[in-house]
Image 1 (cartoon, rainbow, N blue to C red):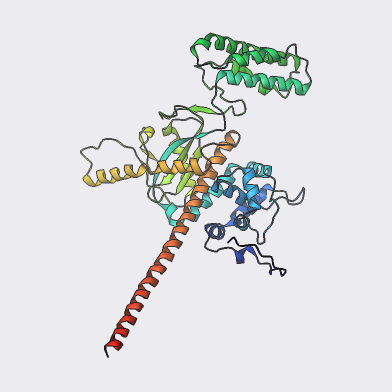
Image 2 (spheres, rainbow, N blue to C red):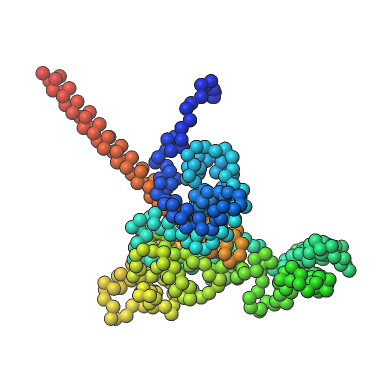
Length: 449
């Protein structure tokens, strides 16, 4: 039978969240492990003490940023779920349940821009401190990956379509009278672009693509004539002209109008030849698996990213680094700031068996960084970066790495709790068996008499 909800006329005495929540919950434990005062002291300088509307508490905003990447949510989702989850509210510093939203989702954008890269590094540094001695290991693994941007797969005709739409929007916004809007012409040309891979449609598709490019160029030139010299759209029109002028062999190509800094990166993968975004460097401790370095780059050679990555790690970590194990993509580097760079290569006769065994083990452990990168992409929002611009690239990788470290420690606490619980059950079970055996022996003796 389905039970019914019973309502009591007598209301319970209100309790604080700290009294009602489960103290063994990983998010509850993490709340008490983070030193929130560090963020208050560091970020308070970005606020005016007397003027303007009172801002949201710093702990609330930092907590929302951590929860967003920890649970792989968008700005809108984390704000919506915050009003439904008491553990989220306790994590952000509240003592009583609040049913309303903590802030508008756009305030997270303003807060990220306010604290900048230095603020993200502070959150990342705190995530390393939480892991204790695991983050102080002197041996690290280094590898690079691609942080894909939130753009579609670029083609020339797709970019030309967007240029035409942007130009028509500018003309409409400014009230300009164009000689021709090409509405009917474009509608027919877009129909001709269908089934472009079919052999019979090649000539028709190429002709339509040339016509669309010609129309885009006409609109750009007409806007340049009609708008004044110092118009606010000069940079956009210059970007549109670059899109029309670029060719297949051009360098520094534009792949997206709203993200012109996107790079085309080839990592040699068979299933995905090219990725559009930027390159990131990850530094992970060799045996414990704590991320101690996360740096954003454009499309540099892997060996050229190693110096800046290790410098960032040395600035964040409290302990020194002895060795950094990398793959053959970093060839050309042997030692950086006293750190020995270990690259796979054939052994020499001068090396002892102990050195060969040690290097073989280190290079085997280097592969452990690959699943770390996979988890960052699948669970912590590194797979697709929705933040805008170069600043957004740095913000996303630092917050993703910080969320990974926080989650690692939460899983460790959870595992230790269950291990402790199992050990108690095991000892109780053994004690019960001994007690039953003792009572049986005593009963048998009485029956014998």
